[in-house]
Image 1 (cartoon, rainbow, N blue to C red):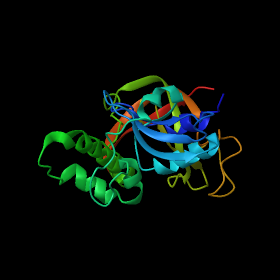
Image 2: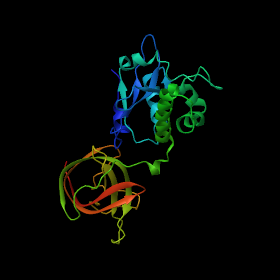
Image 3: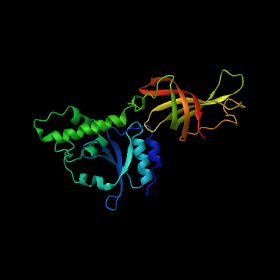
Image 4: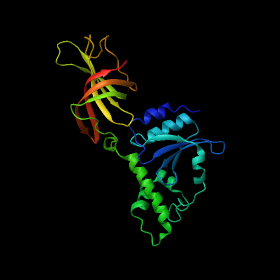
Length: 258
């Protein structure tokens, strides 16, 4: 069994609404792990090989998908066996004659994008090839779009002034913040977290006592760690806002469970 905890963490806040990316397992006959794109109601689309070890394959897949908000999964290689003998993704003309779309996309993505958007064949015999090229163009969009412009899967939660109860939120980021309204160093923790549906929340965990410096938490404060799951017993919805296409729910009067 492979440890998929890295993938579980990577997927937090990502979506599977329009399919997923999948790592196919290595086998005796195919001793490498590979990356595929699984679109709904489409044959698996081979993207590229990754590595001959699982951990290296996962690391490479996460590097490739770092700007992408589509989830990553692991799939048994039997799901892809029918795809290895396909020939409808082979270019029958031009400088890449005899090459597969995945090979061409790896060395010259612009050629595949040209096939998808500008190639005008004189018959319908290339329709399947163009269809596959368009799937690759979607992959290209998902892999290369800047992080700050990724379509958010986050939605506003609750009504302003309303109360939320029993939230389980995973901490995405936490930073120290000095309470400037107090004369001494009271260091709060500014938390960015998400629920399992990817909805973003921001809130302060107030200092439980005075600190010796603006860079240290009080010894009485609960330390919030990146990656931990917080149980929020109750909180008030203070506001909603959107930044760079991502929706956030700001919470106040947060009561944490143990």
